[in-house]
Image (tube, rainbow, N blue to C red; front, side, top):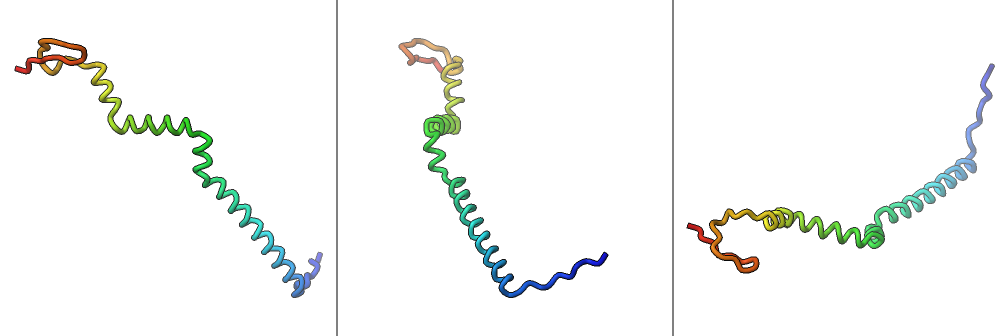
Length: 97
């Protein structure tokens, strides 16, 4: 069975095909630009979850500043400083010799 011969496209058909491809490409660029704008809208996403972001930033700052270690040392203080001679509130007089 012989394949039917195809005729080459005319100049007008090529122009229409190019114009159609150009229009589809322009639509794709506009769609991509809109989607990229939505994905890169960090301020909008942050504004929607501001309380959670603030708590996270405070927690990260506390951790980076060594707050966990300082808090543990304060709460679980063991008398490594010497013999306590007197105490008034949180202050104490210590004999270091």
